[in-house]
Length: 113
Image 1: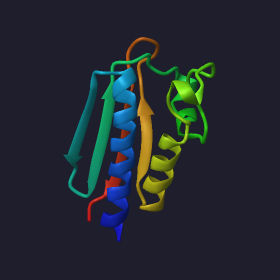
Image 2 (image 1 turned 120 degrees about the vertical axis):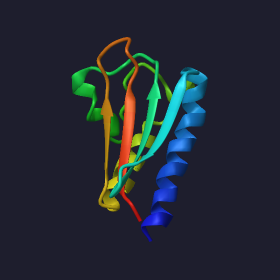
Image 3 (image 1 turned 135 degrees about the vertical axis):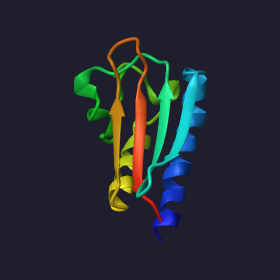
């Protein structure tokens, strides 16, 4: 059952990749076997995140740029879905960034099947 749900996390990650490749052409994905867990990381070279945004980006309908409309890209739901699915599978999702202008890395970690 975990493998079926992990496919969903990869699907949502890939869906986000398609949308964000238009905004951030330099998008990097890494899938790494950590023994008892599998980590999926997606890094961009975009605007970066402030420390107070690292957890907020996983809230439903949250947008880093509040002035950006849905028509300009994204509904603010993708990372919330990834976070919820990861937690439902006894995993976790988190973001890292060194701040403005440094890009961000988004991680999802799941127990290995």
